[in-house]
Length: 305
Image 1 (cartoon, rainbow, N blue to C red):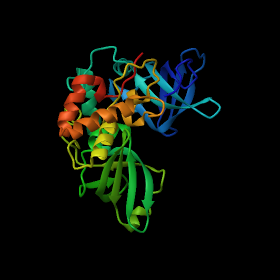
Image 2: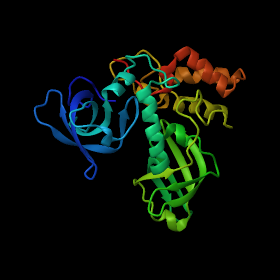
Image 3: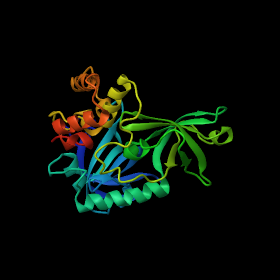
Image 4: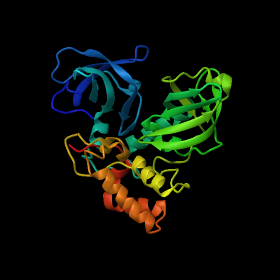
């Protein structure tokens, strides 16, 4: 995350939404402290939040108050939008109201239903990492929003990569990569030639059950080495430490994204989980113990004001 000391420092700032241009992929915003509205590029993998859940930029209305995070270049000049949220989402993110994803309010539940329909129809957004042309394999990193759906996939599951017509694929490997999900898919040599590294794609899969409110992630308990189990927990949970001022990476992204050389939380959690594994605890037992200790903040992106 960026520093929050000013409205154009890369930190969070409130503003008024004017319009979203889907073709240009820009959002026109009048940011607090500014006198003129400006069209900002929206990053391809920008995180959009509506009613406390994931959303789409076209859901915002003209005149609506929004909360924005800006990306900085190397000279610390703001260049684009990396997160856009409505006021309700900002309240949820900052945990100013009692909130538990397992017992959501009506607006949140309705937004979950909307996004489930979109994910089923359009697929989960992601980025092509590597396309192995002659082996017919492709690697895709699914965005943060697809974490609960994508991690329910297993080896051998059929999926489709969006297009007209879509590309048929079979899952070969699924693994967490911080808050994103790494998929290795078999698509065939000719189909792989159409998928270029860096391309934004949508991966369609069969809609899972109510994973958004399930007490455990869908891939909990799978066969892993002890070290892999530890890292799975860090890639599946958010830090619940008391660091404030919108600065803790592991609050908004998963604990695996924290710098272990700058913060003690990642390694402390690794040691805690490793001890529980040595004690013979199952993944569900470890998850339950962590949830009891850390509370619902462990299960969703948040920041502390």
